[in-house]
Every structure is written in structure tokens, then in C-alpha cells.
Amino acid sequence: MSALAPYACDPERSRGRRIAEPSAPPRNDHQRDRDRVVHCTAFRRLVYKTQVFVNHEGDLFRTRLTHSLEVAQLGRSIARALALNEDLVEAIALAHDLGHTPFGHAGQDALDDCMKPHGGFEHNLQSLRVVDVLEQRYPRFDGLNLTLETREGILKRCSLKIAEQMQAEEPDGPARRIVAGEQPSLEAQLANLADEMAYNAHDVDDGLRSGLLAMTQLTEVPLFADHRAAALMDHPQLQQAPERRLLAETLRRLLSAQVADVIAATIANLQSHAPGNADAVRALPAMVQFTPPMREQVTALKRFLFAALYRHPQVADTTLRAREVVRALFAAYADAPQQLPDEHRLAHRQIGLRAVADYIAGMTDRFASREYLRLTGQVAFEGQ
Image (cartoon, rainbow, N blue to C red; front, top):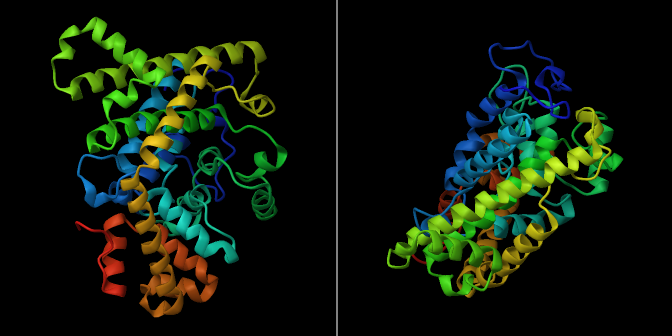
């Protein structure tokens, strides 16, 4: 790792793990966190969990795994330019979606509805639950026993009520900064922004690949239109090339512009506030940001995607069906816990319906579809 800025999280000064462990040279603690995430079961399952499109709809659409890799790549590139802790950014990025349900946000919403009388369901909290409790890989502890810095970045956000409950159980834990009204580390802020950058770009790509979006629609979105025009000016031959080549060059430029903007804006913020160390960052406003003009353009792109893609009738139909599948699975296991595997059936006796939510959240799209067929005799989605 190159020399860190004074306001970066230094692994030598980590706030530690819940259960103390000896160091493991030549890796530092945040490199170990990253490696533990990569080798865990929940990470492998991300390859069959979708972003916008359900797994059976195509092999080339983004999954939670490819999305997490893209977030990590963007995050590391920016972290290097800012002299932040690249390994910590990568660990947070690779772990941030471990708790996501099958079928994207539709699955989360349905599971939250089912769990409302029992504490609800939120994927950030579930990602933390995965690394703290649900992974079973080590003889001395449940979970992955990650450092506080990584766990804080994974949590990202939760309600104050839940944060206070978490802090009562672990006073110096990942919810402390939420209760105190503080910012997370710069590395956590960066992983969060890289997440937004990645999904905006790849949802454009997947939307066009699917045919649900058209290039003519995107020319009305300034952030996309400006970089498309610049690509054509520099490479006029793209006008006659297959559309995918022009799209790839446009998205490359779009992401590069956002990366440069974040670096410039963050450097300006850090110079203005001059935090002396990583702890000083917490009392400041968010430092890792877009400039106001870029934020306005990114927000316009998000509004476009929400209206044209996420609310597209075909996506809406799939979303509705996904919610029905998750609700049916929950009802089936709640009514007949003996349908659960042994491990989860035992957990159900101890923690009730939270064990059902854990089991469903851990499913891939295709496993959830198979379970739905087994339990109901019905096919989850047309075309499967």
C-alpha cells in the first residue's frame, strides 16, 4: 500500500475486531477483511443475485457480484488518487451487498413487508448480520469477525432507533457514529459513492442491452448526451459502428468524468476543512462528494432511470411477480418450519421468523425460484 494521507484509516491503528486475533503478516487487517469476504459463502451467492433483471432473463446482465466488483474497482481508483486506504474501500465494496435478497429491491421490499411485525428487514443491516453472525467458517466465532472500520462501512445507514439498540449491545460498534450524528470514515463515504456511480452506469448499459431503453431516450439526459457527443467528435467512425461500441465509449467517458469530479471535489473539501486524522473526519460534513454541477447531472440521470427503466411495464411486471414469490416463500416456511433445512429449523426455534428471513435473504434468484416450484407447484416466472 502506498503512503496514506493523515486522514485515511490506517490499518495499524484499527479500532479492532470484536474478538481479538493475532496479526497475520504480510497482510494488514483490512486486507484480511477483504480476503474473508471474498472466500465467504454469501459472496459466491452474489453471482446469481440480480440487480434489475431476474437471473433467467439473460446471461450478460449485471449481477450483485459483478456490481460489487465494479464498485470495488471504482473505489480503489479514487482511493489511490486521494491516498486513502484502498484495501478498506475494497473490503467494504465487496461486502456491501452480501445481505441483499433474491430478485433485487423487489425481494427486499417483500421481505420487509413480511417482517414488519418482527422488526422489519433492511439489506444494509442484513449485510452486517451476514458478516457478524450468519457466516459459519471459523472455530472461535460466528461470522467473519471483521474490523470495526469495515463493519461500519457495510452498515452504511439505519434508523436511529435501530442504531440505539445496536449501540446498547455494542457501545463502540458500527452504529455508534449514527447515534452520535457523525460521518463514517472517508473510505466508507467513498465506497457509498462508488456504489451509486457503478449502478447508474451499468443500469444504462443493461437497460439498452435489454431493449427497454433506447439510445434516443438517453440523448435527452445531459450527462449521457454530452459524453456521447464528445465520443462522436473524437471518433466520428462510431456513427457507423455498432451501437454498443458508441455506448461503451460514452459510458467510459461518463465514469471517467465522475471519477475526476469526485477527486477534485474531495480534495477541495479536505483542503478547506483540513482534518488532522481519521477521527477528525467524523465531525465534519461529508467530504467525498460530487461538485454541485455534477451532482445535478447525476441526479437527472437517476430520475431518468427511475422513470424509464425501473418503472418500465416489463420491469414492473417482474417486480410484482418477484414480490409474490418472496411472500409465498415466507408464508410457506412460517406455516411449516419443518420445510427449512436443519440449520435454519434449529435457528427458527431460537429466534423465530428472523431465521426465515435469513434463509430467504441468502437465496439466489434461481434457488428461490426452485423452492417456490417445490413448495407451491407453480413456476415463478414465465420463460423459466
